[in-house]
Length: 422
Ligand SMILES: [Zn+2]
Image 1 (cartoon, rainbow, N blue to C red):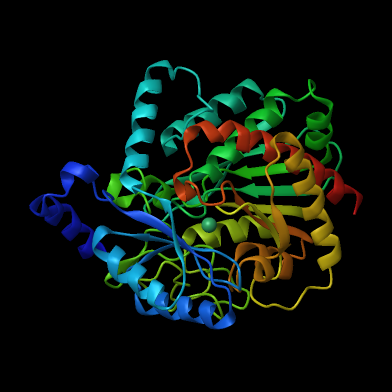
Image 2 (cartoon, rainbow, N blue to C red):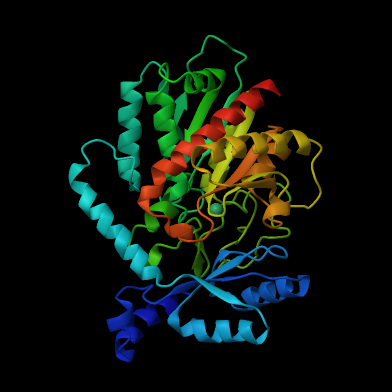
């Protein structure tokens, strides 16, 4: 995969393509969408992608009528699309030129850099900026917010979160954990979590819904759960699509931190190939980041709520991921999802689907929500896929951060109320 990308950078100018496609590692790369309309077509796509491991899958095949998104270089494009057309499948181009979107967004961030005295919620930030913001905001709201340290990442970065607690005298108050950025390239996830944490602090005692929600729980908020991977996506354009951690795994790097949890670890929907984007790791909890979060969560008394934010697809999902079987609390959990997505839709009309992970995307074992529910018994454990539905995919523009934050905050307010009463 790495060699292929490097090759693309040097070969493109020789082919004289750079004039039309622009410079950069993703020049001329397209994201295509294929919708399988039958079980054999789902299988066909699954086979294709397991044989062509180098392809960058943005949305993996799951079930009939669920779309599959794949990024293709100019070298891969003809082969893959011709193959699919021969199989009578139709191919739609979702993104015409990945590099162009990356370039546009970089230009936007550069313009805004000058007025970045205060933390700017309208753009994506590097880890240092995020940690500065956390330091500042917990200083401003000393009475209700503190920083907590989870552990150090593989490359030695601190994993820092914000704890919001307004009722420390109430020993029975339940706890709610929110995390973002477990998958490196899903930038809208940390950004949305940061926005919501900011609102929970800024709007406390100003907005009654926010106040009630903040008072109801001890909130643990970890915006960047995979700091090494996250920082790696900022190194240059070539690394922008990184998903995993950065630990050394033979000739490849990284483990999928959402396939590394110790419940039905590395069964269906996880790969044993260290070079795969869904590599489950050499053992459960092999990743210090995942183990660190799991240990921290285990020590929280009365943990009732948990959300792991991802992108993209607009889905609010409950366990199980590892099996199609529904857990005994399914009705209760899914009703919570329904409350959340209804409240979310009211803000801008953004539509989310809800259901179990295995039902609405695919069977995936070793995920965070499964472990938190199955091992810690926290009933309301969710995995959420934020905006969008594929127009930009992982390259969601900065101008959608605030809208995503606003609507997701309403979902969280509704869910918190529901969790408290159940
Ligand atoms: Zn993800």
